[in-house]
Image 1 (tube, rainbow, N blue to C red):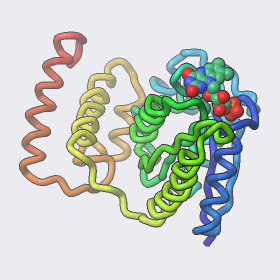
Image 2: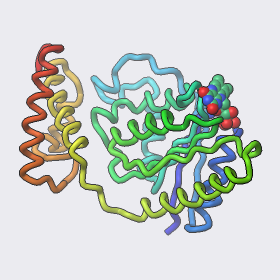
Image 3: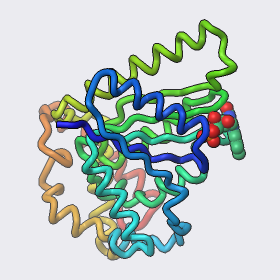
Length: 260
Ligand SMILES: Cc1cc2nc3c(=O)[nH]c(=O)nc-3n(C[C@H](O)[C@H](O)[C@H](O)COP(=O)(O)O)c2cc1C
């Protein structure tokens, strides 16, 4: 079967970031039969987020851009791998990429991207670390699997030695992405992920009285009865640790907010 890759493009133009993703596509094709779709997010006519919070409180269907958001979410879920591509703007992602991510904030509350593999590609002078840190944080909080980040500095201006390094990065990271895509197991969550899951569990209960959609969703998905969003092996010691730390987190939240 052909491997499907979706590239969400966070640049306003088909420039260096686009070229970097095209080059990555060529690398992927050396190892695997792939079908690649490029989405220029800025060309989809998605209006600005109104800050209405409907996606969080009532559900994502109540977003004023619901149809476009759903189409993008379905594309990500159907893809074997997703590339989040953005130039570096002020040592961060572009406003276009940020807007794309803002539309999926509800996935932090109600993750859905289980098993979806994400890789970041960024072009710029350097300083890719904050870009990938941010993209990774979002992909992981949606329930996705972060594979890697590929930073591509201005290729034409590079020394021969550095060009060789970047050439090697393209190959290495393409191989890593394909290997991750082929691994169909859902990873066992880390202690941090288990704690984060518990924090959202607490939030879902607290938010119930404020009419936030999460409680209904958590009940429907049976997450309240589970150790994680999907079946996971969690030993007794970890369970005990999670209970203790969750209590501490809750008492910390109680000092700040009503309802905890
Ligand atoms: C508004 C703006 C801010 C930028 N900020 C940075 C930056 O902080 N660090 C950096 O290395 N490059 C920065 N750049 C340069 C771009 O990241 C770089 O030229 C990138 O390759 C452009 O990608 P594109 O051709 O896909 O638009 C900036 C460019 C623009 C237009």
